[in-house]
Length: 174
Image (cartoon, rainbow, N blue to C red):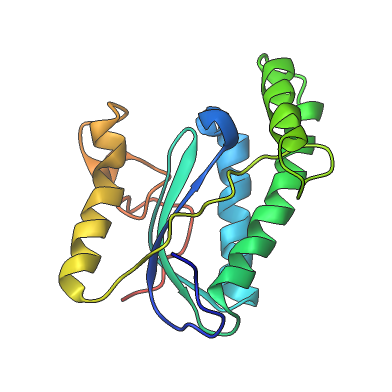
């Protein structure tokens, strides 16, 4: 499903790291995603209703008020791809750096759209939210992801999720 150029609709979107690399096991990388989502919220008209940052992917329910959502996601993925790759490369505490960089470089070689590496998979998996029932189903799926993954017993205990009262990302109220 392609996002339409002038869409003001709400979507459920999944952004996945190439090869399902567990990049977001370290807070520094998760915090960087939060900073960039917050930037898009404040400066690009992105409305974020629900989210979760899992070790190798993000789930979001969102819409874009000012720009086409496809453009905002493209910009977000392009910018974060470059910066996260650099962060991994320069992180002296990253024990898996060579392995991650190797996989990202190989993915970049296999994709003509990239020059040196690829961080995110190309397909965002957008699903248009048609009604409040579908919204609630997708939101529950997002919030239960860390529970089903065995990271926490209760959704509200997972910090990098809109289910948490201590979430570092300010989520727009729906």
